[in-house]
Image (cartoon, rainbow, N blue to C red):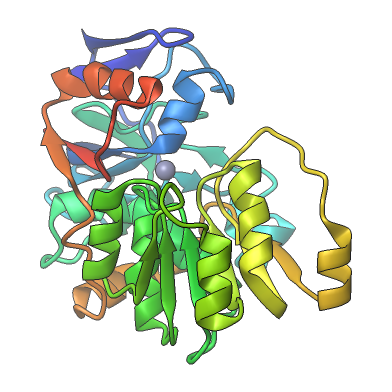
Length: 337
Ligand SMILES: [Zn+2]
Ligand SMILES: [Zn+2]
């Protein structure tokens, strides 16, 4: 099979590798689509470390079951989504359905071989059925780009009528716009330095978009709303985290989603005197993904503008190169097999 193999810092190649053989309890999936996410790039450029090298990266994927055991609920040809958060199902966190925090979690595409290959073997519980009316491409990105903001908005306890700011409208953050809209946000303000992303945010129902290269988002938000109830930070930079704190009103919540290795000196007076809450959000739970796919199946949520490019697996190193060097301007590129 064709696969992308990571062999160490910035070293990616397209290789012919053997199709993996499923062990008992495992399922062989023939991938139809896989997404290329910003967090793949964080690992490829060495900001975070893979658990094994060489590794096949990729944590977003959808395909069809090729081989499943007779005892399995899955059958050959079933359409499935990969849930990259592979949890144990037994620890204290799994028991309270916070399996994103599982004590024994393994992340597909970071700890084990991932989706940038024609085939993948995963345990049955790492798969979820993909409804027939959702494309493999949208199915692939549901596993991270769509479910990450879905989880973040859920744990923010967003109530209908609350105002929201979304900072960072990239491949993941952009999807917070339609989700916040569906969940009843009163006013949605999108912030990003790339104008085409602001345009997509508008299509998705953002009431106001701000380009910080042109206007100061803190001033605009204060003027328009006096501060938002909930702000979401999807960039993972100190500058934008501080911005998120500032544009949140008294008693509001700031949700940090963007990954960073940096440390931050907190502006405590602003937090303490104004009773602002900082919430962090990581990955998603199995229940989140199930709920999200249900909403997509019923067309309560639509992400038709979220995929900006479809490529062949051979083009992945080139796309990664663009992403590493900052020349990439797309939202989400997916591989089609
Ligand atoms: Zn667990
Ligand atoms: Zn991701």
